Image 1 (cartoon, rainbow, N blue to C red):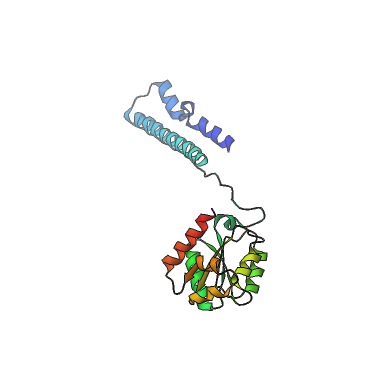
Image 2 (tube, rainbow, N blue to C red):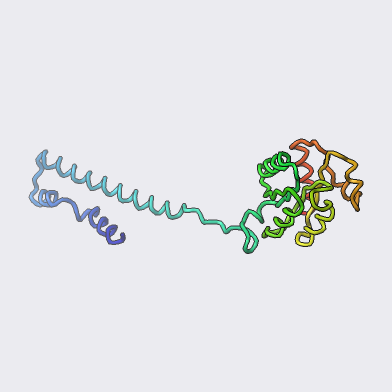
Length: 207
């Protein structure tokens, strides 16, 4: 590339004007046809010089404007999205409700782990590379009580918050620690706005 550019520099220098121009100057020929030919040759070389300078400046601009790749932020050995987005584990045996909550939370840029029962929830938590930030579960999911499930999950994610969801407010009174369940309860049915507001409040308390 450098050899080509150096050759072009010699081509576009004033020393490389057509031989007819130099011969015309030496002989003193000043006819209108010869003067027109000299001017045409001069303009032709000047145009090529402009194109050459444009290519040089454009190549320099391209090199200077290349974006510098940003390093990926993530925990060691985990995908970057685990560290960038809060992880929410949903335990719900109703498929339609579980899928609806999953769609809402994923649209809000949360990383969702859906489980139909506590056994699946524990398996997902075990396979998750990062911590779980929030557990959404009924007071009595299929498998074990919600507070017991939260206790198991907090062994790997001690800062995990819990949001209990139930259509029966009295279900919170049937768990070993009803006060904790009642304080973190969201009654069904709930709206998308209410769900996201409660989640943001819980996650902000541990941020």
